[in-house]
Image (cartoon, rainbow, N blue to C red; front, side, top):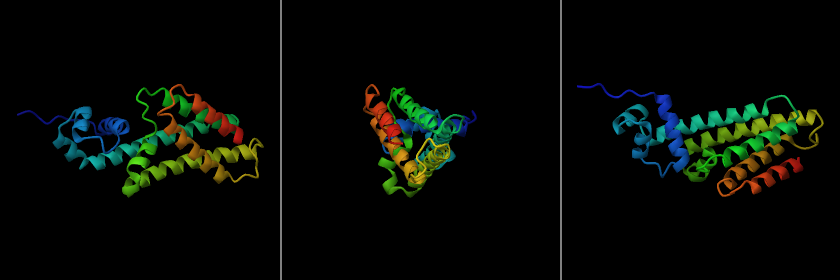
Length: 192
């Protein structure tokens, strides 16, 4: 008798993240997951417990990787304004470079599941908080350097930038050539 197929749980979560990101939680079937991961349903449930538990792991993986990516974009030498513009432009390039136009998994999840799923809502909320905190630190640095009006509430500006990014991530799903997204970036930078 052969041994059960072995798999790497980290790789499984990464692959599951791609399926959930592309299809959303509700539209993803257990069969979609086992086909992508390459294991049987029994192994899937033995390893992760449920589709929802695997989704929570995948969403947390997305949160951590994407938040770290944005934090790294904002945390390098240069003017705060250049770092903010660079981050917004990098998000545009990321979304326009995705042939599936998946947008942001956290934004998609907030719209699909967060109202009825407190665990999912908490994960999304944590990602949004990390993003807002990174924006706030950059805005405050810009205020200290005299690049951004020091009289503005940095927390409010950071919240506005977060809302701008969320809107951009949704808009990217339908903006064919990036014209609208680039206008949003220019308007956001002009408003700083």
